[in-house]
Image 1: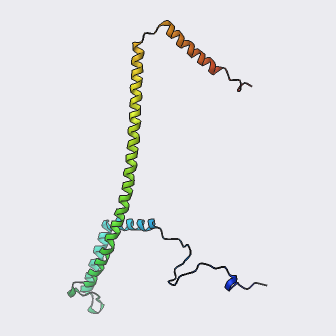
Image 2: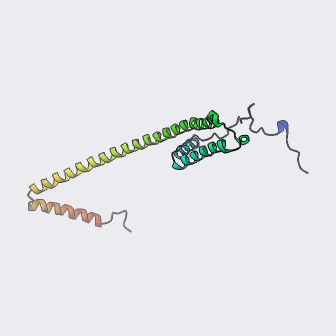
Image 3: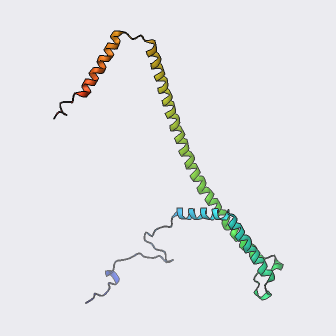
Length: 179
C-alpha cells in the first residue's frame, strides 16, 4: 500500500519564492564572465565586414519594401523619412556602444595583467643576467689570478694529494652502506 504524500508541516520546506517569483534560496547567479564574453562576441561581430554587409542589406530591403510594395503592405512611410528604420538603427547603436565599451574594458584589464606579467618576467631576466655577469667576472678574475700564480712543486703535490684523498673517500663506502 502506497503512502500518501506529505503535506503541511510534515513535508520538508523547499525553496521559497518571494512575491516577485524570485527564489530566496541560494540559486546560482549568472556569471559576470559569461556576460563579458557575450559583450566581446558582440564587439567582434559588429566589427566585421559580414555584419556591415548584413546591416546594409537589411536597410536596403527595408527601404525597397517600404517604397516599392503596395501601400497596404508598407509599414514605414518614406515621406516621413523612414521613421521606424531610424528608430531601429538608433536603438541598435544605443545598445552597441555600451557593449563595445564593456568589451574594451575587459580587454584593458587583460592587457594590464599581461603588462604586469611581462614586467615581472623582465625583472627576473634582468636579475638572472646580472647574476650571470657577476659569475663570469668572478671566473675571469680567478683565471687571471691562476695565470699570475707560479705553481711550485709543493703546491701542486698538495693539491694532488687533496684530490686523491677526496677520490678515495668517494670510492670507499661508508660503514652504513656496507653489506
